Length: 407
Length: 135
Image (cartoon, rainbow over all chains, first blue to last red):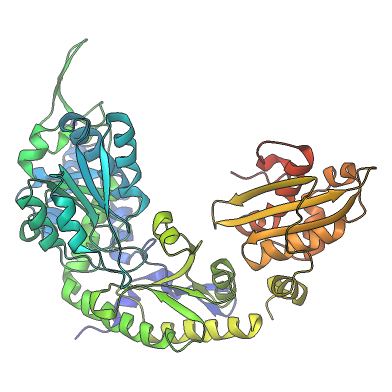
């Protein structure tokens, strides 16, 4: 049985002090996770021993770096259950992956008046690309409401499907509420209505086992840096038959088979969507992160986070005037967003920082969701595989201190 | 007690002296800090020599932004509009008596930005009005 302490030994940053005598209590993993030695050292080794541009070179280093880059793609394909590496496109992050679908698939296959269904709990990255497309092409956007219990209103969803949408795009897990949406059922319903589906997996893929074939999802976007990997690398999964029909996103080197002065022939998948020199070291780093997570096991990660989250919900609900925005533990991943009566979230985060506790305050890139609840901002504590119950206790002590300051 | 949250800041946040609205008023301007959703509106009344006779702020925000608005308005009663135009970032930080990092500086300076934009009669409040030097 794995212990949290063993896992924490892999993360050097978790042992630093924020200031002299003040150890770091990192409760901001939903924004970005910390990185284990295995990832840091893999990237360092790449630059020390192997660095070369990929795909075109014939020298030894180029062959090695190409092999390492493509090996990372294989690891990721297997991690999410993709049928082939052709279905795994490297992007910069979740945002770029969603934009890729909006620009490439959306521009080619959508007509004025077509309907896209989103939800009220989306991150801006799954709103703004569709808003841009909507104003450009006259696409109609509809939204599945968030209920009082912080779950999606699936009755309204079923009614919206009668509009015969072309796409249903939704977050697998809300980065604010922690709500884990019933993706498999929602995807099945969308398919029955003739729609394609896209899930924003930025908060799900790092935290529990996600299998794209089991979900039968058409597109899925996620980011490396939230799953123990580096920044600057993300993934778009897409079903091969869809990606084949889509035009290129960005044009340039590597995405072409042949270029004439006035025309070009696009490369095959997955390279068709990877223009220019990609984030090679970062892709390889993400491969190492996938190895790391698989060695621990996503079931362990999920169970650990569920335990911490349940404990956090229980402890935080003891604090007078504290209101939690999110469903009960059974529908929730490892984020707890809250407000404290009479104290602005920025003040909460600032005072906690004095004790080395890193939480996030603001709208967490989900302004419409905050507006729905008539609050300008929340404070969010988020957990990962290295979080400890003691850290929840320190958070609670910090919040109690805030009560005395503002009391 | 944390330095950033000096007693005067907490006191002004909880019991502001200049919170409210002036209707009618001679100068009114409002703006927000998109980072944290802080929103401040400032209403001023001036006499025939363009001196501030009354001031009030409304809106919502963190302790730093609310306390700085309250202290700032207190400091401009009796001042001429030209004197108000000459106020700087340092004046606000002196009123608060704290050092702030770049993120919280925006909170502290929101009220000055709103005040100066109102006094200059501008359509919007550019950051360089208060010399933030960020964004």
